[in-house]
Length: 65
Image 1 (cartoon, rainbow, N blue to C red):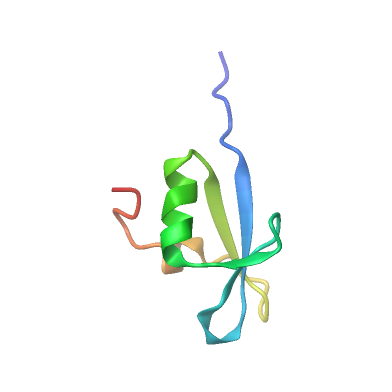
Image 2: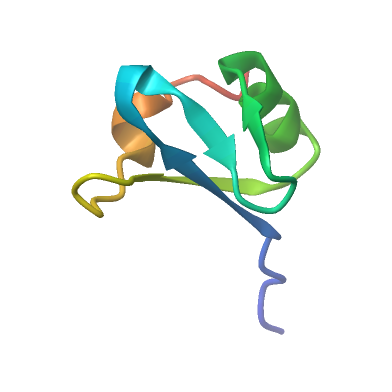
């Protein structure tokens, strides 16, 4: 039986480390990202200037704990 995928939330990272939730159209804090993860969302962070995905660089290991 295939695993069910977690819903994904795209977060854009702008200059000065501002994080923008594309779905809700609001700026979010790191604490709000922690809450999204706790709710079961896969948080994907994309750097707007370069187009690179930087989720692993922004979210430290043990972030869900």
